[in-house]
Image 1 (cartoon, rainbow, N blue to C red):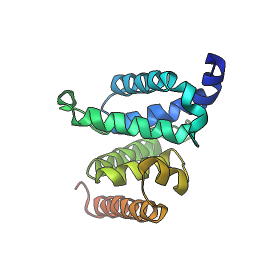
Image 2 (image 1 turned 45 degrees about the vertical axis):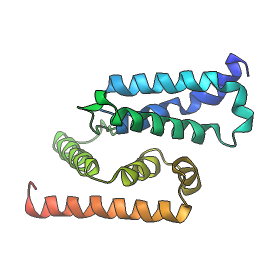
Image 3 (image 1 turned 180 degrees about the vertical axis):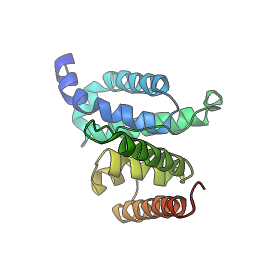
Length: 169
């Protein structure tokens, strides 16, 4: 595969790779490094692309595995979940502050979710993958993906309701 073909295949989803890395790692720099590393690995494997049914799913799986390995490494002492891609200039300052607060709480709640629930929630609700793609990326049955997503959403919802009902929790 030539460089131009590689770019046509990989570039449309490189931002998704970055967001996945950012979801799992602490900082912009860590996510950028991880994304660059994955793109480099993809480039070295580009001759094999025809053998992959879904290059994007393969790349997302590589990103997930790379980031999880980083989290397990000694260098990962201070890595945590941080992510938000929400922005709307047409809302009032009060509403923006409330939204920012809610996003912050969702991020804190997601930090406490089991790793698999975190991943499924990220892939489905942030990256908008369908259940089949997620099941392929995470090597899970589609039914298990649905159950995991349901449990993750329920946990986030319950913690948010608790926070809003009782104040700071």
